Length: 94
Image (cartoon, rainbow, N blue to C red; front, side):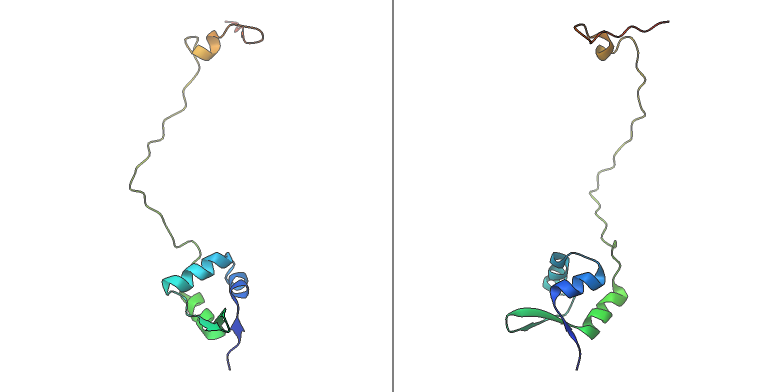
């Protein structure tokens, strides 16, 4: 007879959150039984799932390519350097 694990135990074994285990069960990726109102996972089913499991296999592709802009250098025309007021003036020596 196989050992049965609850959701928390399976999450601990796979090093994921218990809600992730519940999502895998709902998606049909992980087989589970309902025993007395509680969800149980057979040890052999957990090992079978663990063979194909890679924790970071989920990649999200938004389809949007982001362009990285180079850092801008400060000039005397920068509005931040033209601030006037108490403690806001900066004197740069040339």
